[in-house]
Every structure is written in C-alpha cells, then in structure tokens.
Amino acid sequence: MTDMLSDNVTETHADLFSKFDPLIQMRENLLASGVEDPFGLVMERVLSPTVAMCNGRETILLGTYNYMGMTFDPDVIEAGKQALDDFGSGTTGSRVLNGTYAGHKAVEEALCDFYGMDHAMVFSTGYQANLGIISTIAGKGDYIVLDIDSHASIWDGCKMGDAEVVPFKHNDIEAMEKRLRRIPEGAGKLVVLEGVYSMLGDIAPLKEMIAVAKKYGAMVLVDEAHSMGFIGPNGRGVAEDQDCLADVDFVIGTFSKSVGTVGGFCVSNHPKFEIMRLVCRPYVFTASLPPSVVATACTSIRKLMNAGEKRAHLWENSRTLHKGLRDAGFELGTDEPQSAIISVIMPDLERGAAMWEALLHEGLYVNLARPPATPANMTLLRCSLCAEHSAEQVEQIIGMFTRAGTTVGII
Image 1: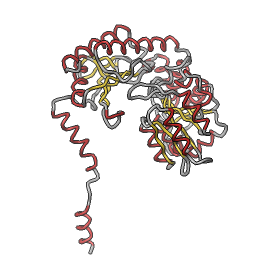
Image 2: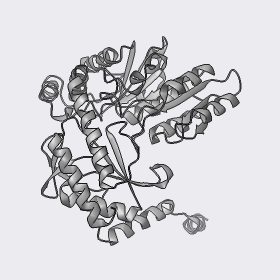
Image 3: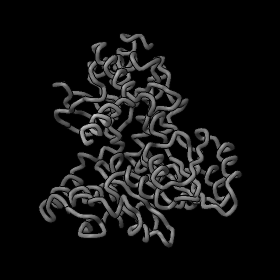
Image 4: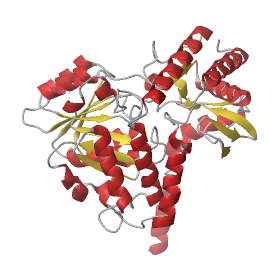
C-alpha cells in the first residue's frame, strides 16, 4: 500500500519551478546572444561613491542609489569602526528581546530630529519597513488605495495584511478619488503613495493627493525612499518640498539610498504609534541591525541635516545629465529632471542589454530594468546620480552614452 501511494505521488508531482520557465528562457536567450549577464555584475573593489573596479577596469558608477555619496564619508566610516570595537559585530536578537543597543535608540532619535516627528521605528531593511507597517495597520475589512506603480514591498505589505487592495492609475488624482468615493463609509482606509517612483524617476502630486485622501477620512503613508536626503529644503522628501509633510501620517524610508548603509524606518506623529513595536511581525521577529550599521546610519543622517550644498550640486548634476542625454537623441522617462533618477527608454530588452554592455565597455555602470518590474512593459537603463559625481564625470557620462548609443543603433 505504501509503495502504491509513493508511485502515485511521483506520477502527479508538479515541478514547482515550471512557473519560472518563461523567465528562464528569456535569460537563456539573452546570454546566448553573447551579452554579459546584466544582473550578475561583480564589483571587485569600490574606490569611492562614484568609481569601482568592474571586470578589471575602472568604472564610473551611475546605478547605485548612493544619492548623497555617504558611503565613504570619513565620519560615517569612523563611527562604524568604533561601534564594532565597542559592541561587536551583531546583536543576535530581536529589538523586543536583546537587540536594542544604545545605537538603535540613537538612530531613531536622529530620525525624529531629521523629520521633526515624535516617533521613529527602525527595521532591518526598507522592504521590511513597508511590509511591516502596511500589513499591521491595514488588515481584514480595511481598504488600501495605492498607485498602480507602487514598489514590490508595498504590494507585499498589502498582501500580507489581507486588506482590500484598490489600485489606481499612476499619479492620477481623479482616479484615486473615484476609488476612495466607492469605499463603504466607516471602513478603515489607507492611501499609499511614493514621493519619487524609482523606475522613471518621476514625482507624485502629493499635495493634491493627500488633500483628497483627507477629504475621505483616509490615513496617508508616503514612501520617500528615493527622495529622503535630497529633495526638499531639509532633505525630508517630496512631501516637505510640496509643503504637506504635516498631513502625512506615516513616512517610510530606507538607509540604503541617501544614508549610504542598510536598514529601513517609519516616522510618525500618531499618538499610538509606539504599540507597533509589539504588534508588527517583521519588527518583532527579525534580528536587529548590527551596531556598526546603526552607528553609520545615525552619523550619516545627522550630517544630511546640513547638506544643502551637496543637494544643490546633485540637482545641478541631474539637470546637466537630463539635458545632455535628451540633446543626444535619447528618449527619457520624464520631460524634465524631477529627481536624481534619470531613466533612458530602450526599444526592447535585447537592445537594452546590448546598450548596457556597450556602456560597461565604455567604463560606465547603469541599471538595466526590465518587465515586469517596469511600468508599461518598458525596458529602461536607469541612471541614479550622486552628489559626489563631478561636473567632469557627468560630461564623460554623456559622451559614453552618445558613443554607445551610436554603436548599438539606439540613436
């Protein structure tokens, strides 16, 4: 009887990897064309926020999200070294057990000071920040209204929380209001938006959208991962820049962009926010960040409070690169530079990969972004500028794009 049962199970067993077959085939086709794997690049040595050794050659980095160039800041590095000496390499525990050290409280205090808010909660990654906050505050019977182009971590947070998910067309205020109007009166409502959308580098009309959300009694969460440190008079993001930060209930951010290390956070003025430390599963059941990481993050955040000159230079870089690429004949994701992200639209994946490789041979690294992660099934070469890029490097980059684009036949 046991043998018969085993045979039957073997015969009907499905390959759990079969759902990935189209992606496997696409990758095999791409590599068979002779293109280097654009998703497997190894950096042998990183020399600065803007230069690394890749495949044995010096390469300008234009795809790292290191917006403010804090990864090699001497004060930041020294803080990390000191924390290693004083506290060791890790906490080996959750924040609610043995995983809260002095550095964890210090970085949360720095975040409160940076944003001028009452509460801050630090997660081990930015992904976990969205996963934890969204899934905890919006559950069964509640409604989440969100932009269709929201980041994967936002969608995953919605799925984990089991709320009713109501997407609307990207940056469409009228479409958002229509969705809110249909939600039953008295139901819990959360509107989730992003300051800067990472694929095209475009910003949201937050001021108008938040006003609509409040009109219908919804709470608002804004993910400022790609704007924190750079956009706004004090680097607090698009909500600050549009003068509506006071109307945001929760701001989500990450340490892996402008802050220059790893981790995620949520800041809020909600009077009951501290209970999240006991009910938010991705916070309670995850080991806390190592002492060296929170020390570097804390030092970086405090320095970003007085980084007006760096922000101004980054805006200058963004405007120069956007104009240079557009004048060269490339199609870009935005008509004007809106952030530190400039996306160059490729005709298809094959030519996008060829262009990526041609740029690498020129000595330039960018991100190749492909469907389904991209909006409207676009293939993009995504450039993320850094405040440490010199004006000369930006001009070099424009020349590299022009030469590679001509060689591949994009322009």
